[in-house]
Image (tube, rainbow, N blue to C red):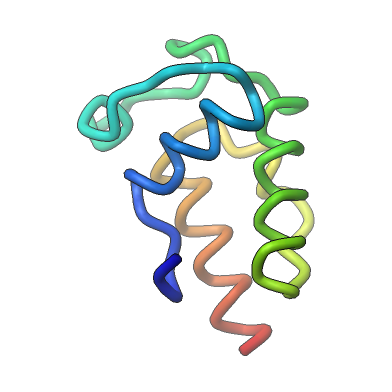
Length: 84
């Protein structure tokens, strides 16, 4: 994994942790929300837990309640930079 989480990595994590198959390009659409893909906060919580385990860095509280993929990536990547 790269230092920053990408849309491609997020799509793979959504598939493995939330059981949702999403094309990374669809995650990048402006204004798109997780709700459109059927991803809820529990699914995002699984993604956050996986990221914390893989990277050994706590992710800021609130990432799992992000409404959009862009907001989620911003929260996660900011948190990882701060913890670096």
